[in-house]
Length: 93
Image 1 (cartoon, rainbow, N blue to C red):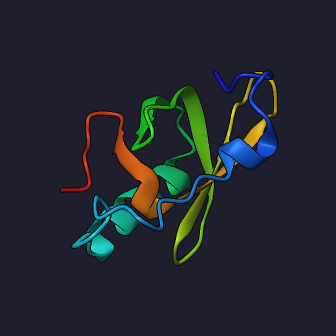
Image 2 (image 1 turned 120 degrees about the vertical axis):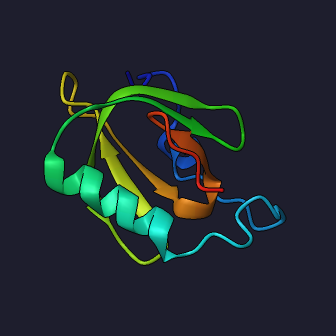
């Protein structure tokens, strides 16, 4: 679940100095779009900064970011796609 103690500005994650997102093609974005279309909660989302979300739904996918929503609390997080190290059992590599 998204924590209510994390300020919104920390949830809008950027990794401008990171190379972890380098080389990610549109196929990872397509997997995020598929997750959005299914509407099913994703059991685990891990970000490159170590932050983890549990049982969140992909609400929106843009060209460079994803909106995750916790269906239980309606809290949301906007995350840059390059900041996602894994979601569910999928990694972007």
